[in-house]
Image 1 (tube, rainbow, N blue to C red):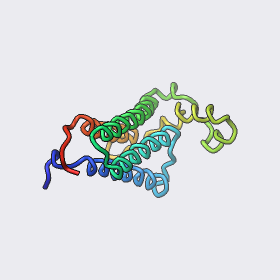
Image 2: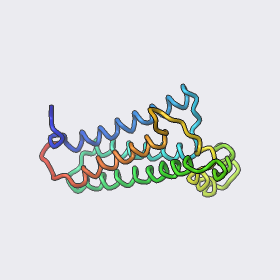
Image 3: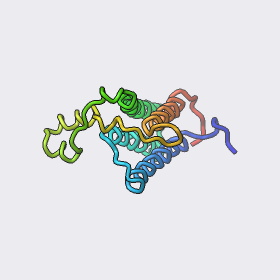
Image 4: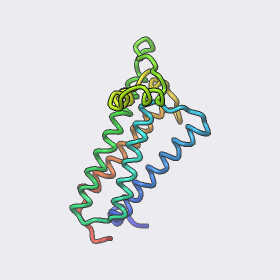
Length: 169
């Protein structure tokens, strides 16, 4: 079994893609089978999971040289860090006392139909009272699990950034 230093950049990027795909499959299962309705911050976090996964897939398919791998790694660090910011905001909303939770807003379909795009986008990124609802799995909220995943994805990309060039294709 190869050690971590024997795993090449292409394999690591493919692993990033697979992890993000599994995260999205879990989100789809929770939404459609478990009937858990995602809030606006959940949807925003999903967007960053998808972006991180697509970057991993493109990097794996492209299999660039050292400088290209570093560019993909930097982008692969930025995307989950931004996602982690939204997961952190959701955790903050979930930690507020009930009397300080913002009011719940209208549904996303209504927001995008009735508001100009930039206003709707701003509302999506801010979250509302719906985002303060806590669903726990294995003792942690979904936002906490997502934050942990984003940190892990950023760290894997950081490893890609700082690792010495190996000759494995």
